[in-house]
Amino acid sequence: MEFKIIAEYFDRLEKISSRLQLTSLLADLFKKTDTNVIDKVVYIIQGKLWPDFLGMPELGIGEKFLIRALSIATGVSDDEIEKMYKSVGDLGQVAFDIKQKQQSASILAFLGAQKASKPLTVEKVYDDLTKVATSTGEGSRDIKIRLLAGLLKDASPLEAKYLVRFVDGRLRVGIGDATILDALAITFGGGQNFRPIVERAYNLRADLGNIAKILANGGIEQLKNIKPQPGIPIRPMLAERLSDPAEMLNKVGNLALVDYKYDGERGQIHKAGDKIFIFSRRLENITNQYPDVVEYISKYVKGNEFIVEGEIIPVDPETGEMRPFQELMHRKRKSDIHEAIKEYPVNVFLFDLMYYEGEDYTVKPLSERRKKLESIVEDNDYVHIATHIITDNVEKLKEFFYQAISEGAEGVMVKSLAPDAIYQAGSRGWLWIKFKRDYQSEMADTVDLVMVGAFYGKGRKGGKYSSFLMAAYNPDKDVFETVCKVASGFTDAELDDLQKKIAELKRDSPHPRVVSTMVPDVWLTPVLVAEIIGAEITISPLHTCCKDQYGEGGLSIRFPRFIRWRPDKSPEDATTSREILEMYKSQLKKIEEKPSDQNV
Ligand code: ATP
Image (cartoon, rainbow, N blue to C red; front, side, top):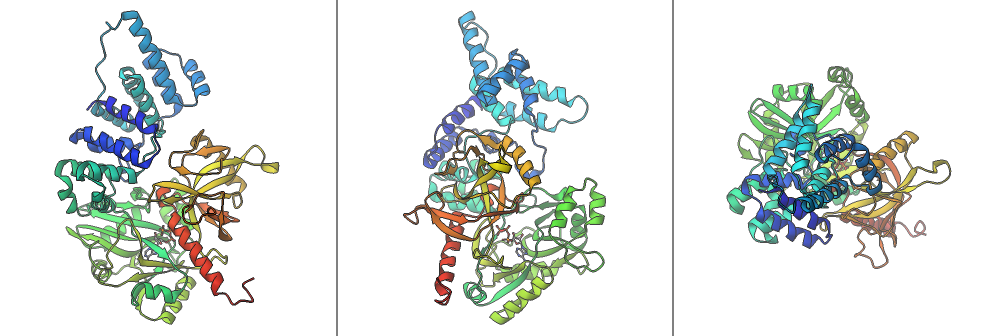
């Protein structure tokens, strides 16, 4: 398949922002894509060469390096390219301009008689970029430059533009996973109504390339029968939140399995023969960070092929007591993994089983999943089943909640034992409800928001970006809607660090997936996710979260304060607009329920 087709579609996609148009144009591109490269085309659209969970190296090409390759390919000096880059601000555009100029000059000079170079194919681009990403050791620098220069030499102006942007990690065609799922449903199912089948498959195997390949080869029927596959992560099941224990029991059908809610790192642990993989909350491959966990699982969990889930918790090796979550961060910062393991030992508390020896457990009720999980874990000091009770009693639930907190847990998870309480991969629902310590604020819980813009500070913070436009995720529209501007809670060091990140993420115009009425000093590509607490949620004409809901404006968080970064969350894992709406409604309810002398 010619790479030209992709470049032309990227050019068209970049110019539109309507989700509907994006989807149908993408579906069009999929129709034109050869079956044997459809997975590669999907990864390229996602701005990567392979899914993150493989833990394969990234391209990791700096701008200087890219300029060098462009210079070799075009004969224009590095200095000249650098100058053009400074004035244009987009290296892809610079590549386009240079190639365009050279092309018209050569056409004029040779009146088209010059021998055309062989057209670039997707296979060639993909293979060469794979070599660029994976070559290591002595001489690899030269090999990488040579390969990149070779591709750029053969590229048309438009191809060069998108090649450079891809390598630079700035593809900017504004397509999220949700849009890719829609387009796949249209191309291979015939319409949007097939979206639930495609989405379910993606929830069980979070690899859009793999899903596209199955669809292209076997059609929608084959996708219907898909099962989880050890080695490919399952999108995690997520919990709703409530603060009234009676309401929680009621919601799950009055009988619940109540687990401690551990405050560590979520780990989805896969065993496939003699291989063990650990995937994080955002499905990155974190196996290398936990060789101790790999060892414990292979020793103490029976079976040849399985997928289990649990929380990895720092513990005091002397007493077995839980240690604060921050210790995992310290552990990650240590360069010597063996030292890290010794200094910050961990235990695993398993709470679910999704696959066992060829059988899909996601479709079975929690009672069955838990029974099987208990039967495969051998008694030991390192891997445990989450501490739990089964109850229908509100007082027992409260007692257990306080016990959990006194032992260092964050609260409890109330889980439905109904016959249809399956593992809802990739979705947040009422089958699991989280009951957390109160943060002593009107806002009962923190939210995780995406940074989409930044403002310059005044006074002591003059000249620095010091307040930030934050947004919630709206999965229905696949966009980010603003909720607040946060300026407090950052340490000086965190602010300094953030300046560097902003330099990498800043852009002149809003990202196509950001919906905002406020205009910050710089827009940011939505990547950074921060945990935020505020005083309360109000309606404000300045913000766009759930704007269609209330005529006067969107929902906004008053007095927001930064708590910490959430590198374990992708922007699509941020708190959703609907969740903020639910929080707003329950806050209203709380105010209405207060005795009248307090309600002033
Ligand atoms: P979410 O994961 O729901 O988006 P979050 O990452 O902000 O939210 P919390 O709101 O603290 O996390 O709650 C959910 C997380 O709790 C899960 O992702 C999981 O890592 C953790 N957890 C701890 N103990 C359990 C348990 N027993 N069952 C399920 N999840 C648990």
